[in-house]
Image (tube, rainbow, N blue to C red; front, side):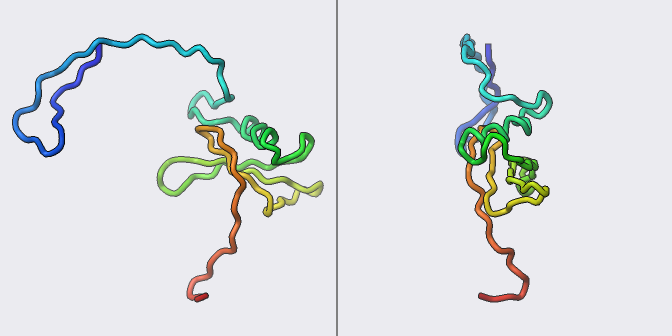
Length: 121
């Protein structure tokens, strides 16, 4: 059973509502696991993120890729950024990808020139 206690809708005021119980609903997950995830954080592993970029056609099967987990602002969320590397280990910044570590969505990384302070366009 699930219980909901003391809630009010909108701007209602007054005494808290009494606890309301509802019948539980049974469900099962029957699909196999779609992604390999870190057991502690629940996000996609580095290997899984790289494999998703390869599956999306973003890199050849034998290409060297560099994957970095980057925090997104102050939200506490992350994104995998993945770049191909040359034979010398240099990152090819023009052809990177972002992989959402929660949903597995792969998108091309849009690069722009950094803005300098005090410079007007």
